[in-house]
Image (cartoon, rainbow, N blue to C red; front, side, top):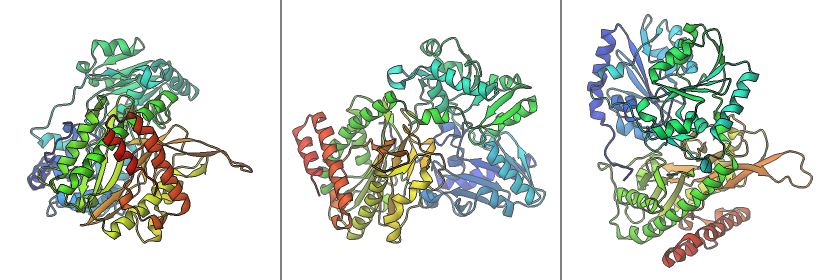
Length: 602
């Protein structure tokens, strides 16, 4: 199994660990320390060594932070994790703060005493974040101090850094030679008068050099840093144990490799030259080192971000194939679930294990794209619920079952959510599921003028829920990579996403509705941005979405009377195409029969 069911943290350990951290602060003459979720690559998914927030607080969500002062400590999370943070942290030790209303900088401005010295690890914060923290503390008469990591100093059994081998990502999957990528990005640097760009995100290294790795679970990336020079050379800083002879040959002569500790001296060597640094994704440590060396920082986006987000024809073809393969596994799983759930003998872990088994039987599964979220009944209301042996719940016939899952295949990354009935459906759940479906269909059918961003479309997914006085506390969709991260920027479908959508970008479309203590509902397809036809008389260049995910939507949870004629037509057409695409790939007649019934018109 890729997925384990051991509890990743223990809230009971929080008080002692918090005390140890405070003792370390006092020994160093410090009054506070900041513990973000991310790592030196500002990554959402981190290696075990970098799970500092979970180690200290017990909270294991993929986004959050903790601010520790001598007399107060707070964990900051967004709405996705409100229930999870309550369950995973000690309420006597840690305040729970919604980051939408109070950000860490705001909390520090109010909580820090005048004269306090609050430390941060410049490897774990970008320049933008560091400046916000500095200004907030100065307003309180306090000081932000750069430091090595205090959690590392007290985490006595901290895991070693990962050393997964670098592997080539062939042209059959990448669609563009790495030398061509380096050349076109270097040309942009030259035109801007920039000598080099600091690359600090592993996804960027993986995309630019056509390599993959295994340093982080569920994300096929090799951790490291690089400098892309204006002559298209790359200096790659990575543990030498990770670069196999095959990888060394694949990288070629224009990519020089060196250990991670050579990154700093390489930055020093850029003194007097202009260097591109990303304010939000590069560690503040990089900017501080360049400033100390006398380099000129040209603030700007990581040059790989947009090219990586806009998939080429080969990548899109691979992603389509991956979704068809994954769709077959999902159909086999859903048929199994329909047959097994009425027994009342299934648990959430049984469901997760079965689904992974069907994906493994494709013979192409490299990893899960994230730990499967499988929430029965009230567990479904925990947006990013991860079942453990301690929380494993029996799937009682009649429970609404939410399963959010995906696979990493060499030709693409999948992410699909379906919410299923396991018996009689509560009417209020069916109504909510139908409103959610209306929002998912609205995004799927959307057409918009080129130049708009995700924040311009987000409300389409919420409109039906809003009319009913409902909403959800997460974005409508995130970007997705091509055999890379399941969450990929800069594109998104949310109120915060202001990056214009471009053809070739892949996003999730996943509105939801959650009732604490009862059920959670989410329906998710992946979609790709594509040029849209302009109706007769139209004057603007338009974009739309191509559906990538082909998996039946449970009609037992749909109140057909709430759908209008166009929504019903979309759903029937989606199901007809799902059946047409997947049936020829199913070898078992019983699977084909189940698919035909699941995809019947409303």
